[in-house]
Image 1 (cartoon, helix red, strand yellow):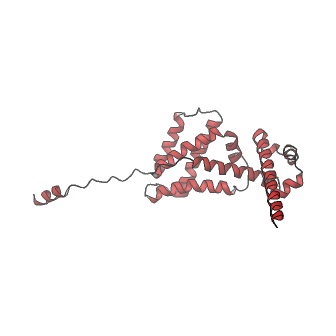
Image 2 (cartoon, rainbow, N blue to C red):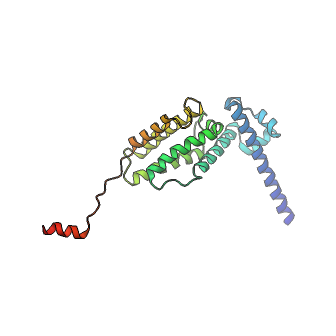
Image 3 (cartoon, rainbow, N blue to C red):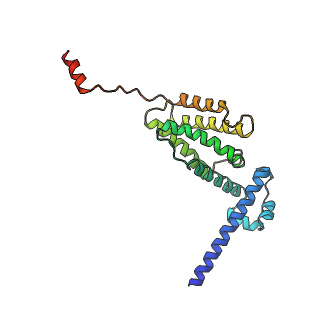
Length: 213
């Protein structure tokens, strides 16, 4: 019995190692030449496997690429969550804008893989990532400081941060360009409202004296 369990465990480790090797080979090709240049034949050559092995683990070429992109989104979200966000929901959104750009600059190849593909539907991790942004926007709505509906605000904010990140990666703007901060702050101003002014209460002794005057 123990020998059988050991054999099963070995096969599972070998299978996982094979999947990882195939994914790494696929990512390298995508990073170098893009999706259109990717062929199963070249993945096989790089990974040292046969085409049936790839089809067994991933189904087809489209599913293989989706798996690579999905892994990029997982790493993207992990990086964005590495530091605690500010407690104020608007400042958390502002901080998220800056971290998003930082990730794109640090991982331009992954960023292109994540957002430059033509695909019919986003991967599960991509959907989860977008939902993370939506939750940050919803947190602003929850404290009564969002000017527009949550879905519209989420889409607009993503358009802004993705556009800025793409321009910086492409070299049109330099990292830390004032224009990026202007876009960020303009979006915050347009989408949110200031915190309500709260009057400071007077001491009880002063309230009493006013009533007797």
